[in-house]
Image 1 (cartoon, rainbow, N blue to C red):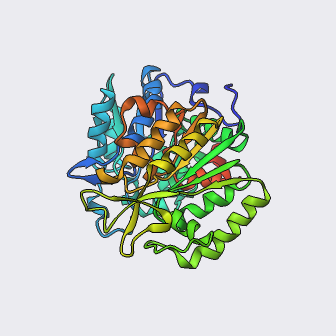
Image 2: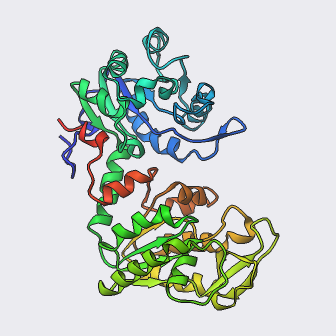
Image 3: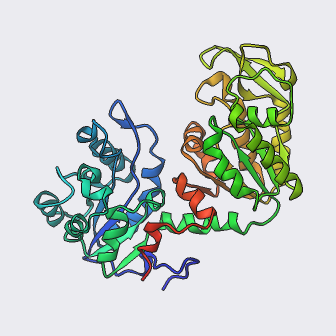
Length: 398
């Protein structure tokens, strides 16, 4: 059996040939003009799919898109995701009209070499989110083996995540799930120094990560709009928009605990500001000189240099959140500089979070390959780093 730090079986341990293998993937990706806006999760699923296909398995993919409570749920087909998977993998992807019943059963029975089945959106059935064992049983009738390769949904006690694997005699984790465990394990037990770069627009989304990193990191680099509240907490007399006043006291507590634990917290010293991200160019100012009515949209050259120097000395790097409004070209330079710095550092690097992957989507393939691991998960990363048990992982244990 493949050695694994969590004690789980790997897909490599399964006899896949001539068996129907259901792989739970995470294709919950918004679509724009009929195309998934970011295909990272689809790309990351392909190695597990290819391993099963080349081993002679009949591959069935199960995924969800959007919540079932959405008024548009009946329109949230996985067809765009199947089309993109076919383009990226070279496999012929068949999408039955439903995820259970006669339609998928016939598609699976008729699969030939080079073909796979992507079940229609699981949350079209309420039994998925309700963790209904009867719905799980209908899924189990379609397959012989179960593989979970969807780390991002492992915190959810859903039928395809928890109830289904418990009904299967043989269950295992996929290659991407394995990679998540191994890579995030190197954040839990890092080679030091561990430098964490935390950005983004909403401090509430990042506070849980900061709390966890107070037990792990040697240096915290803070960018993006969340840096405004940190600057205010250090009693900077600033005219700042996007400042979360209700969290200043909490940030002061974080800064105090970081100081007691000898964790260095580095904040921006210069920034690029404008009235909105829709402007064609910004104004470079010191943080003490931000004009009234202007918002911080990027870190400045001095801050980029300071952050890059810290990253260059790291042996382990964790990145979550862009350091500016990277979607707008005039304010993307800081985030692109951080990507470049992380790739050039002689360190084990992990990036996670949807906004982080979105920032990386505009980077070159060479730069993306410079990261040791791109986590396709969000909250699951936090749960894992915090040591919480995930329903999808516990259900895989034999």
